[in-house]
Image (cartoon, rainbow, N blue to C red; front, side, top):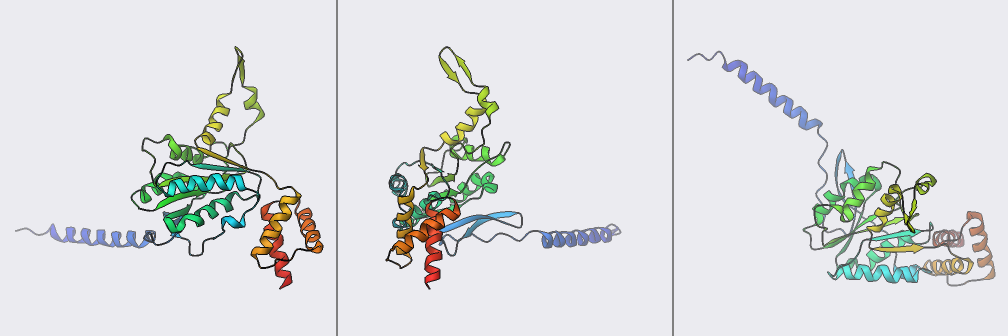
Length: 289
């Protein structure tokens, strides 16, 4: 039997094994296996791969720590309770003034119901195109998941815009019963609007027909079933927030000196909000030792 062909074949196989070994060595490391014991997660990239990363020290703000947003608090808690109890609930868009409690309210609602199986997944804007993958990973889990998209805004041609529209209710796949999307933004329509687009609006037969560009931008916000609006604090609201945060940090006394310092702090920041009140309280308590 002529075996002259065998040696070149063995050499070829050996070279192939070496190439495979080198390829595997250069491949990105596998992402960690999902830890379903955690209560909060981030969707993160790991060497060109993505996975749920447990948050070891989540921000555990409570509903009692938030003031001047009682109406918004009531509506979001009711919607979240329906969701946790297995009833129908809506995706939520929280919009309005910066620093007035939008993100804090989402985290506080999660903290209120996490003992009942509610989990929070933070998804950055750059990963919105991964929303179908996230939903697929958690769809078979017994827990309930809120996908938290914080401080959203889009520019023209942003792929994340279309991905979010599809994830809300535009996909051929039915929405997962154990997933809701809670998003915050400083603007209601999430995408910048231009005067030239309004100029294309037509008035025909007594009816207003908005330009297609405007209709497209409004369409994303309308896919959220519940809208919650937040407004800047007046002086009394701001001072109430300062008192509340000082109390949370262990200082119950409130004097004229404290009030003057709080007002000066807000004047220096150029705004009055819950965030500014929290920052003042941290500074005041820190200086007091």
